[in-house]
Length: 181
Ligand code: ADP
Ligand code: MG
Image (cartoon, rainbow, N blue to C red; front, side, top):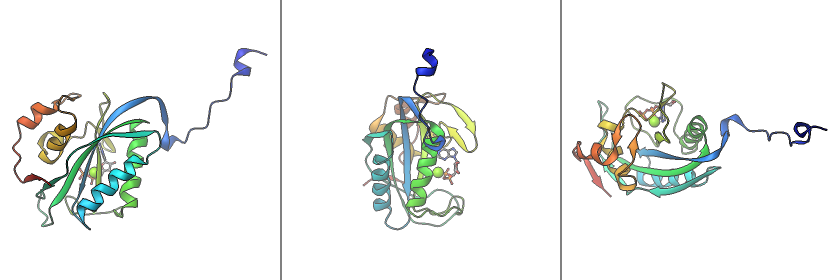
């Protein structure tokens, strides 16, 4: 019998939950402006804590923010979570979308409109990808104070791949329409 024949067969891996043999740091932006937004954001944090192969290691302060864009709607609650995960980036996106659905976000919704919960993968390790289904780093980070301020609470020295250092980016954007809760 050869060594190869004696080796255990590889464990079946659900591709939606592909687990890597290393832990990657990732940052998730959360936002809600429907159905008691603070409760929704805190519920999403708890669901992130329950993800397989994942540990939440930091949670920012909660922020209130004025809605952006043409649609008249309520104020948002925002936060950023830092985690370590063995899920690869697409698997983490699948889990984020499952959390959005579990909290009642419909499949179809108005662009720029109100949402019960939004989970965006802001940064995933050193990854850079430009796929419209998963763009990393998230393209909105630089101009969104409701992302940069909470991200700076938990990772001011983070160097966002191809974008810059969080504290520097925060320093170049005013906290207009943003407040801590
Ligand atoms: P936004 O968060 O900019 O308001 P949406 O949440 O409405 O936009 O966008 C949803 C789509 O964006 C998802 O179907 C998802 O595939 C895609 N997407 C691309 N990059 C990312 C990312 N980094 N994090 C989350 N969703 C992303
Ligand atoms: Mg989103």
